[in-house]
Structures are given as structure tokens and as C-alpha cells.
Image (cartoon, rainbow, N blue to C red; front, side, top):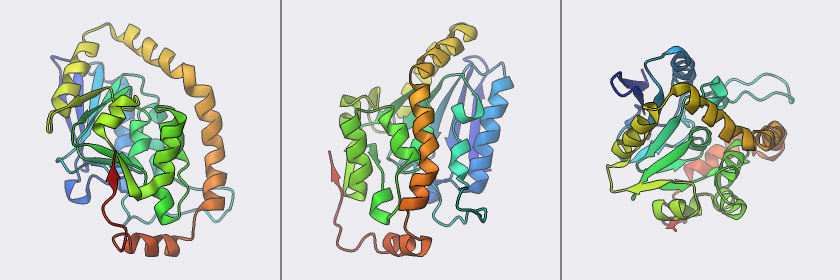
Length: 259
């Protein structure tokens, strides 16, 4: 199992942990399937009224797709299979509130998850960045998700700067990506406290409020995401060239700037 789930029936809260710390909690096909199945399961679990999502360890919340994974693709230029499209709670029709707790790095495909939670709590040492352009890939779904949570210029800068720049927790708080900053190691506890408060309210009212908040931006989000497959197909370098860029990522780049 690539996920660890802890349910607290007294508080009505589930803690969902991406449990691949040796891979910086990167998502392989097994993890993607487990996430989709879990969100669908929680729709029917009346003992769970809110959830907290985090990553094991302190180095990373999630670093996106596991680079060692091969994703089979249909033999058509009009179809792209993306295993990360189904890993978020909203993609699986779960409207119980989910809070993310971020320690360490959150980058790339992690934004599929962060884009579908209600709010984000982060440790002071957390950093956020999007490496796609550095490796010759279009940041489409990730950039769209972040453009829904951040000012346009900040989302564009993160997507375009690639690995050269990371957004620190304090900056993420200032621009609205993060709603609370904790001391190192404190993100999960803070997120659980918030989730427990929410879970203590009538779940019908809570879920209706979640739907109402999401409806405010869903039309624009859906239209933007409909364009993503074509943009990726046109703009991505061939996988071999991407791999070459990724293999040489440490050469000459220096440490990324944190702001």
C-alpha cells in the first residue's frame, strides 16, 4: 500500500498519508489508483466528515508523478492518458472538506492534489515550485490549478520559472496559496485541529458550503482544463529529450532561489 489512512471516529476526521518517503512521496500508478479508490470510499463513510491529506516524512509533501513510471498511451494524437487526473477528491465527486498539510517540497503533479483541497496548512520550511518548463514540458493542469488559488502573476511566475525559483511558506501565505503557517513539523497537527472543528458541524451544511465555494470558479476551471490536452500534445518535448534534461538537472543550475 502506498497510502496510509488513519480514521478518528470520535472526531470524524480521516488522516490520509502519501507513504512513499523514499521517493519523496511521488505518485506511481498504484498510488494514483489507491487515491481515487479512497476518495470514492470516503463518499460513503458516514464516520468521516472531513479529511487531512499529507505526505510521509519532512522532505516532501509530494513531488508529482514518479519519473520511473511508464504511462501507456493510446495510439491517437487526440487522446492523452494522465493518471493524475483522477487522484484528487473533487475528481472523484467527494465534497467532504479536505485540508492539505505540507511539510517540505510540493511541486509539479502535487498541484493536482493541492488544487482540489479546501485550504492548505504549511510548515515554515515548506516550498512550492513547478519544474515542467525546465524539462521541456507544458505546465497545463498544474498551472490551471494554481491560477485558481493564486493571483495570476504569481501563478504564471511559478509555472514559468521552473526549478530556478521556489515559493517559500511565508510568500505562499502572503499570496493566499497557504492559509496557515506552522513551525516545522506542525502542519499535520494544525490541519487536524481545523478539520476537527469543521467535522463537528452538521455535515449537510458543510458539504453544501464546499459545493457553493467551488461553484464560484468551476465554470472557468472546466473550460481551461478542456484545453490542456492539446497544449500538452503540442508543447511537450519528446520523452527522450525530457529525460536528458532531467538527468542533467544538477549541472550548472545552482541552488534555486527561495522567495
